[in-house]
Length: 271
Length: 99
Image (tube, rainbow over all chains, first blue to last red; front, side, top):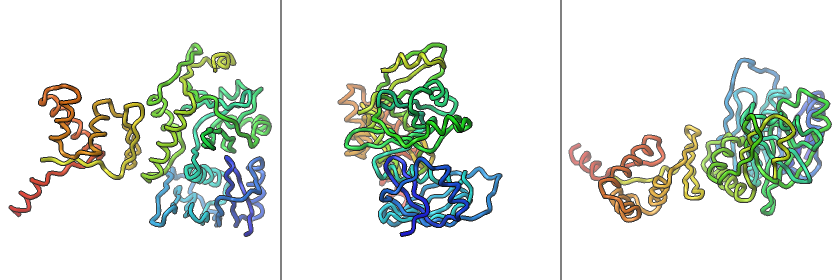
């Protein structure tokens, strides 16, 4: 089968064909570190279109189709497609621009990961002593700041991390999805590599005048973590799967609230 | 006699004695207190309010009046949020009898 492009995140590879050469070059450059040749879990036929409504603020929809494992995914006029996770095939109509494609990839991987014991988490991920430290919270909570203050350590992302349960070990994987650090291309180029590490802990960020670490009990962490997962579906089975995964994750990985003063001293407080 | 059933279009999980319920139609996560969690668990086996009130009286050693008030208050809240469905077969029969 002809594959124009193959992108791998969290050891899950997705192949696509149907790109024009000029756009394909752009995509290969954008996702350079995440290109792959391993066997894809999903093969997509892509139909690109030119038009785009710049004024729309579309919501993402993932709707389960009648056929088992089949989902309709849509974001306004940006993209619409049917993904069959059982057969590993899909058809997608998508606007030919890098923003629509990046948004599509996030939505697609949020779905594919759930099927493979994983999820995408709004968090910064930093690797220290071969372990991943995940810093999570909503926008402006300090994820990019934590990354900026840790530039001597390998970075997984400053915005979205992929997490998977592999034989009861929760691993954090780098993604090509970046937040504010993307405005510093030199920094991203050096940081953006395909990496993974076993998760040492998850830290819910809270800006403060002092640095202080507090262990969270499971129900507190569950409520907070669920709110930071990239998840778009209203399908009961998928929601239940995510709830079970998150519970399993928090039983394995310790969680903390990290009140932090934005300077490098916060690393001294971490376990 | 009112009958209570959990809405099949919701997802839930009990974590360290607290029930978490997600209602996908409004994308909301609801966290239950210990009493609400216990009633939520009882709804798995029992759907008659009278039986749930009886169990709560036994387990929490409270007056029936208080237990009934608490159970009714919770069920009404859950019904408003479409987390449970409440039916009243007697009332339904009455309505069908009188057209």
